[in-house]
Length: 311
Ligand SMILES: NC(=O)c1ccc[n+]([C@@H]2O[C@H](COP(=O)([O-])OP(=O)(O)OC[C@H]3O[C@@H](n4cnc5c(N)ncnc54)[C@H](OP(=O)(O)O)[C@@H]3O)[C@@H](O)[C@H]2O)c1
Image (cartoon, rainbow, N blue to C red; front, side):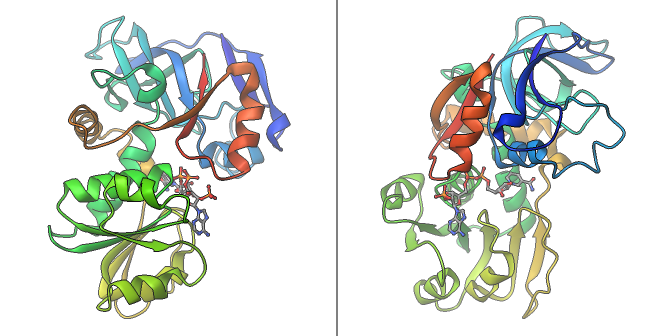
């Protein structure tokens, strides 16, 4: 089968189309004939060698990609799916079967849900990883309805889902945006929008003098976000920042791999797409031999909506 993979870690040019042995679904697994796989920051990391240690016991080439949509074409023993089901899945590229940038990927049956009614494979592929990460950030912050949540990187995939899910959870949302993204972030549901960039914590404090109850940071400013949060509040970080914290603020680390088997959460996201709560945003599609160009465009920044590789 055809896959996009990296043999030697490096820049976008390190990605190439390769022919790999056809994988097979074991017990409790399904194989998906992938039609769409998204480009995410973590794929850039894998390609550049950030997960070198985790891949140490595996032979190259390594296949990136944490999100796929397509049709089930093989069902392992005990997996409750049918050949032909139209599905999306969260994929763990450092796991035994590799990532989603491939014509076929094998995943656990509980990492899979139906494609939302009305969505095509390209749109559906943008849901699982960032949707689950956003859900996990909110679950960890555990704010009661009516509480105030700050969101940084609100125009991005993770941040955008956090804003939409937070509104559905009944929270008040204060989100950052550039001038160009302000309308987008308001449309996603933010109640208050403050200008993104340096000094953001103070601008949030100016808007919410008591401080937000929790904050989800998709921009990796980590500790610089703390001054925006009230004493005893929570900060959700996405790349494992461990502190030091201050004023009794709890640091919650989002690790979406912990939700890779949380099929109920993934299915709830599907329902929320169907209900119009969540918006699937696609910026552009690429063919598999254009994967390097997709990575180049993503790394240039400023992309709104996900870049999707079609297989
Ligand atoms: N731990 C996990 O399990 C997990 C899961 C999902 C995502 N993540 C992480 O979450 C982060 C966001 O992912 P994503 O897919 O949402 O990325 P994305 O779509 O590129 O969104 C990031 C957003 O933040 C903006 N931004 C970047 N740096 C900024 C800064 N210093 N100040 C203000 N805005 C800034 C970006 O703007 P520009 O495009 O203009 O730069 C973009 O709008 C990534 O680091 C990703 O690795 C972690």
